[in-house]
Length: 310
Image 1: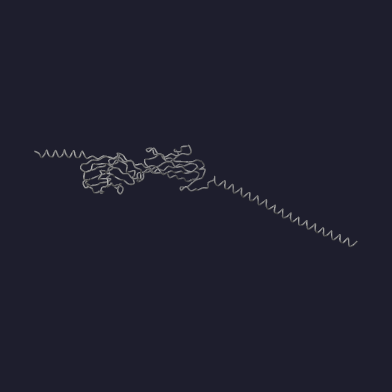
Image 2: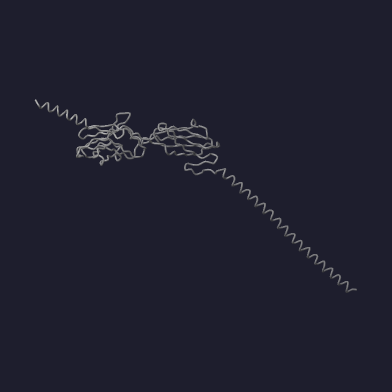
């Protein structure tokens, strides 16, 4: 008679114990930058004294758009159990064991990838069982844009390439003109889930101006731009070193050298005739002087001869 009643009482008591064991999230949503680290956590009641061997914790991740579930980390009766851990998290996901005795299940993920974004489940089993959902958002900004240019016949090929997430829009500008309709933009997904975007613009080499490309991440409302040198200053190759002389720099130097050469030639030509003239003039002076001396000597001889005769 008392047997069935005792079972019912035990079931009711167990129900109340389980109901008292609740898991709460520290925060419902986390955000991380691609390549950084993130720590997400939930809180649960602990026994006094704390018994690690009776504690089991499971972290799972499911895709926000499907039912695909990946095991991220498992602690079974106080022992780490990674046999069923998904390959995406091997060597990157761990549990902060020192936080367990204070009632915190803290999942730490290194080198966050875009594919880590989604919904995570924090499940704790101790005196009872309970779980909560946590959302992880991953941002990958288009921080670095690789701006390249090359000459092809009479055209200049400008290229901008960058990686980020989500997919960005690329626009091209020259001064105040929008040249986006003339550009060709393609993208592909990397192994890390990033969008690798390449945009190419072909322009005439004789059209001067400063060209720039802009990556607009609509979801983050963020713009990143890269600028190329003005075409009137010459062209640059992929590494940024000049492939053709800068005419605006070479022409003044050539003109200056030409003027210096002309001045030098003019000086030499002026100096040489003057020197020859002075030489000839001195020679004539010496000749005239000798002639006068000879005449005087001759006159003196004639005068002496006349005197003797008289």
